[in-house]
Image 1 (cartoon, rainbow, N blue to C red):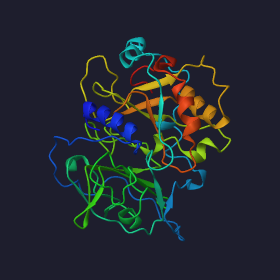
Image 2: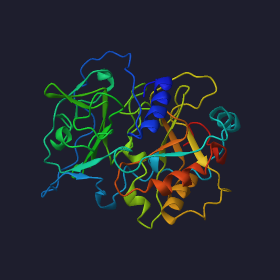
Image 3: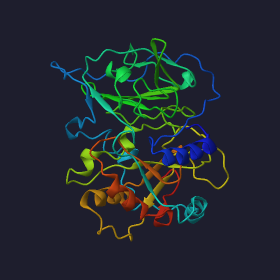
Image 4: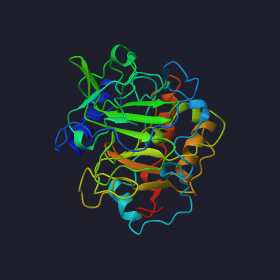
Length: 346
């Protein structure tokens, strides 16, 4: 995650060879592993008089959009100007570099969970980026981590109950009643407590960014869930109306909407950069649900959110994905089919 490119790429190759989960090994940060800030920020939205119940993997949230319509994840960039260095950035990645769907049935992809407003909050000890992590929300300490995450697979990225000790181990949960998103990086249950490298909490009714220079559960300081390719959206029959999260092997600083850097490689894209599938690319020959994904890449683009393998598109772990269809379709697109939107455009 945080500028551990060599280890990450080697891990990708090893994981592919072993046909294990499609995650990457994260490296430790250099920031002070102090306790997280006290839970300040926006007030918690009112909880419904009859809160929902139950823990739901891959919750569709009744089709409700994540973040407001004018949020950067939901921003139409189909007519945004190109960056003057677009060609150079694509050359840096490599024009023949193919796309890869970094998601599929377990253990591939990043799982997410929906819970009700009554879900108990569990305190989290931050071991790497405590000074840039959120301890809680609306005056309440902790994250709504269901007990199943300790004992069952597929709640934490990597599919290991309790998170295990390697990989990015993202944990994502939405309080569907308060409409609040909680995200953790390097999550694990260890010696009777929840630990994480970093954590971030988002009011899904707000466009508030992380403080400048702060990370999140992602290297760029952005939320992860709104950038995932999610199964329910892909097969809904309606257009997907948000950008997707993408990784590249190295980055150089950051631009809006990102808030955090994780590299300084000359010639590389910054965190927060947006790639857009060229409008001239013919996508009509693909299955309808894959066409919807590619059309979203033309309209909303891909946002660089982490260091990893070049042109890996992030999506949700879901048993319904068919990688026999996804892999060849994504592999048919190359970096050369994309262009870079003017950096920081809004």
